[in-house]
Length: 201
Image (cartoon, rainbow, N blue to C red; front, side, top):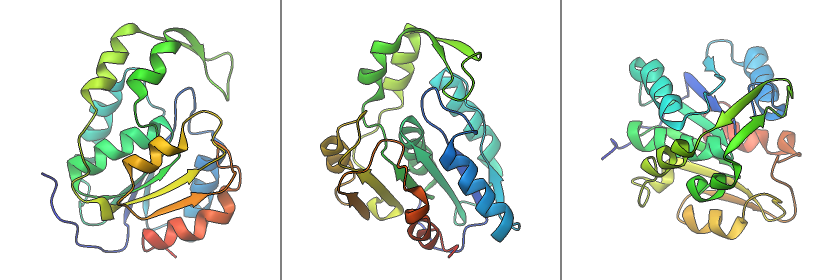
């Protein structure tokens, strides 16, 4: 069981992008820019995640192994939200989730084969059948500390079912948005709420 969180100002912030995405995503770049301008004292890390979920999680848990649990936080979008949930459950840290994937093993089984990056179509990778099982291995039961999570869920998400996301994080602080889209294109409007949750306002 993850430790109970002693809420304090965030000193270490991890951002996790979604499937076929990268640190070049609009949300990642906007948050990185805000942190660089307003919070240079916060350790920021937004890695390019490997296609293998097992390798991605091994990378993350290794790098954050010495991060302070009571003042670290993770932000994740889509598949990154699924990963962020796993990180938060392992560490007890706060997590902000943006249209988080709930059952990526089921959803990404349709994407086995060669894929390309949204932000660099020349960057290609293979999503292997084994990765579906690796995702399944990262699936967790009920949240240990629902209050550690803030979820932004758009009813207009064209990729994931908002009802499934809502059910998964129903007992957590949540902003359920009428309309919107999977990318949360109006991310700027929600940045103050995100920062306040992390004590960075």
